[in-house]
Each structure stands twice: as C-alpha cells, then as structure tokens.
Length: 261
Image 1 (cartoon, rainbow, N blue to C red):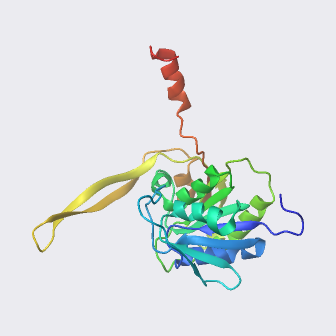
Image 2: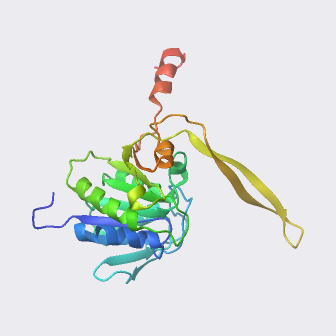
Image 3: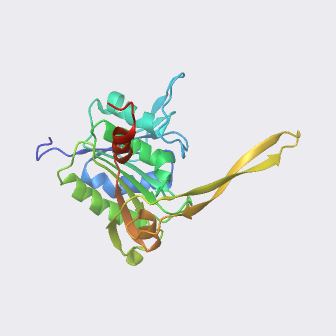
C-alpha cells in the first residue's frame, strides 16, 4: 500500500506500438496522477490476442519518448510487455496497468482478439488492477482530446477506490466531440461479431493468397450492451472476468452427464 507521500506506479502499454498517437495521449492524460512507466511493443501488434513469445529471444531497449518518464520498447507482444515490465523494469507489481489508447473499437467479440485488452488481462491475472482504453476511430490522425479528459477523470477515481484482486475494465469511447458524449454506461459485452470472408487473389507468379475481409454484425438487441452504448454516444465500461468457465453449462453437465462426479 502506498503511503501519502508516495505516488502510485502506473504501467502503460498498448498494442499499436510505442510510437502510436494513442499511447502518447494516454501518457499525457495520466502522468500527473502517478509515476508513469511505459513498456510497449516496438511495432504494431493489433489482433495478437494473448500471444506470448516462446522459442526466440525478446529484445527490450530503453527509449526517450517523454521527458521524465521511463520508456521501454519490446520486440514482443503486448502480454510480453507486461511480463517484462513487472519482472525486469519495475521489479514489483505496479499499482495500476493501463493499456491503449487503442486506435479502433474493442467492443463485443473484439475483446477476444485484442492485444490491447490482452495486455490489461495479463496484468489482471497477476493481481494488478487494469483498464484497457479504446477510441472508436482507426485513424492514426484520430482526435484524442475528449478521450484524454475522460480517462484522466476515470483513472483518478479508480486509483482512489477499493479494488478486487482481478479488477479489469474494458472501456470504449465513441468517436464524437466531448460535448456530444452522452455519459458513461456500465454494460455487458454484446453478442456481436464479424461475419468473415477471405478474398482470394493471385500474385504475379500465379500463386493464390488471401485477404481477411468481413462485416461487423450485431446480433444482440439489448440496450445494456457495449455496442448499444457506443451507438448512442455513451462511453461503454464492461467489467471483464479472467475466469472463462461456463457455470451454466457446468451445472447442466453435472446434472445430466453420466460420468460427472
């Protein structure tokens, strides 16, 4: 527990890479709230999910991105960054881990594939309170001004509250001006996913190759979901569990499966 004189240590990472505008905005939003340390991938790692690097070495180099803030770039995945940060940079668990700000939405099924959320989840697994932040704008020229205001206020409140051991939030911010944000809404994850297809093409040597394409389809009509909230200009906040057990199915199997004990 920090004494009154100590500043909380805030670990920041992402999946878009250490040079992405989103992580710069996140650092600027919270640097006044604690001792910020950045450990992030040296290149984009979007869609990596919870992958970790095995079979070949990781490289970690100190970089000077922000005055007065320790910053390291890592050759691995977002989850690798959190592991290395705790073991080799901080030599302790930080008080909070923030991942983002992601360029693009991480709502609904995207949380499964997201490197942003997997970094936050890796921290939560280790008992570090964590939040993943995403702005619903995929552009590298995205305007993060509204996001910075909101994140600063939210993180200040989170630092001051009692948190359970595996505290983990997925926060998505609509791509609208600050005055058009309707509010903040606690949500559940929508049942919405990409209907995917592979576009088959032929290279100049006559060999086939494929581009993943698809359309995001919302199959959930609920008004308590992250998709609904974002569509109506609310910031969506979804508490995420690291326990993937389907307890309803477990009970069904227990009641009906002849081999269940």
